[in-house]
Each structure stands twice: as structure tokens, then as C-alpha cells.
Image (cartoon, rainbow, N blue to C red; front, side):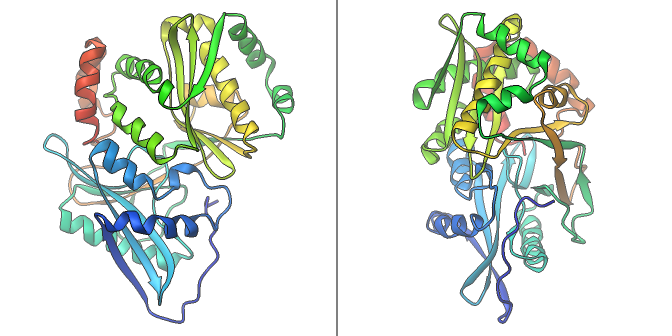
Length: 361
């Protein structure tokens, strides 16, 4: 099922598509937000202000295509131009996030927006156009797709007690162990950015993955001060688990979360996720989105134990050069690089990682 169901507008006039870029983007965000919020259950990661975040936090070039009938907005498609000398050029909707693609009131409008995006991909000479959605768009230019991952979502009850009763006995036991491990849990914004990033950067190094720069998370806080926050779990003064939480409209999601492996025996990660879920319930949210996972993978099983269920994640491509799997981290060509990255000092990965990752779609 599509995550957005926006009422259709009149088609009495000719449909036209316009491109917005540069300073004009900022002035259009309020109208795009109003259009988006006609739907129910909207994750914050679909908000059009992410175009600003990606420009400020990843130095990517944002664009947005708008479709109109007369003066009435019928839909829009946010895009980011990702480019580097090492990896090449890409047009993505949207990097870092799990959601993207056209926000439109019907299939015709979505199709016209994709038509223009394909033209942009040709003009920018990218390797491919990538649209991250929850459903497949029926478009001749998008024959390639990845469906190997799913979104893991948990319907939330009204109270923490009701959620606790729904949890498996093994999960409740692990949470209790975390509560007995002399851990502390703190919430915040700017005051928790550095401890969050210290855990996140260390964990990304351990996974062999280039880390996003702190600048990205600062841009998120600046753009969504009332809807983005960090949760940090400490053992004494040591941050041992941390997560970024985004509160949308009826949906809370966790796009970035990490824990330090040497503290696994404390169940810090389980304690943290219990607090994340409670926080979403406190904010009267109806759905908790754990993010994407490969079916039957380790993170899939971790999320499933909380009661989360899979929903489709469909990434579609207009491929111009190469292979859609060329940039996937599980590509065999990156095996040696990943092994070397795991051995690098964390301070070096914190310097080099952001310079690499902003060029990766």
C-alpha cells in the first residue's frame, strides 16, 4: 500500500511541470509541506525541507520538480544531485533517507514528474536516477528495481504498559537486564550531538562503512528543532548507545542508531530501543518505523522481536551507465576496502568518511 494517499485535484487545465533550484527552493517549501500533509501518517523523512538539509549537511545540489494544473499544485518530486570524482554522478530522491519519489495526487502526475526527472538525468549526465519509494511506479524509463529490503514498522498502542505486555518475555528480560546495568538514558538536541556522534562514528568504523559528518546531524537539528532529537545511553560517563529519532505526523522513525559492541553484555541497545518506543508513545504516535532491513538479516530479526512487520521498499532506477548494484556496500569489489576501513583509527575515519560518503548515493 502506498504511504501517501492525496486527494486528486481537477484536471480541467493542462498539466505543466516546472523546475525549482537554488534560492527559489526555500520559498516553495511551505506549499510543498501543505500538499504533503494532506495525507495521513507522514514520516518526517518525507518533508521537503530535507532538500535544505542535504545541501547544508552533505554539500549536495537540491532540485525539485513541481506539477501544476493552472495555479494549483498537483505534485512534486524532490531530487539531489550527488557527484564526486571518485564515484561519479547520480540523481537521487533522496540520499541518506529511506523515502523519496513523487508526491502526487494521481499516477498521471507522477508519470509526468518522472518524465522530467529522466530528462534531468540525461542533462546532468548521471550514471542513474534513483527513486526510493514504497511502491513501484509504472513507467517505461524505470525497468530496474531493488526490492531486497523492507521497511520494518510497529503499530503503537496508546500506553507504555500496553506495549510492555505485547513484548515477548525474552525481550522484556533483556530490557530488565539493561535497567539493572547502571546505565543512564539522556535525551536532547545540541547537547547530545557530540556523544551521539562519538558512538555513531565508532560503530560505522567497526562496520567498515564511511561515516556521515557531524555537519549532517547539525543540519537536521537546525531544520527540525521540534521534531528531531537524540537519545544517548551511558555507562558512567561513557556513551555506549545512541540514536537519532525523527517525529513525523503519526510516525516516529529512527534513521541512525548505534551501540558499542564491547558493551553488548549490558543490553544497552535493548534499553535504548525501549526508551525510543516509549518516547514515540509519549508523542501520541501511531507507528514506529525501525528503518529498512534485508529480509531475514540480523537487523531484520532484531526489529521483528519488538513486533515490527515488513512493508515494501521499492527503489527504482533509470539506468544510463553501469549497474544499479555497483554502489551497493555488499558488492564484492568493496570487500578489501571494507576490511581496511575496519582497521583504521576512528579519528581518521571521522575525517575521511564524510568526504567520501557525500558522493555516495
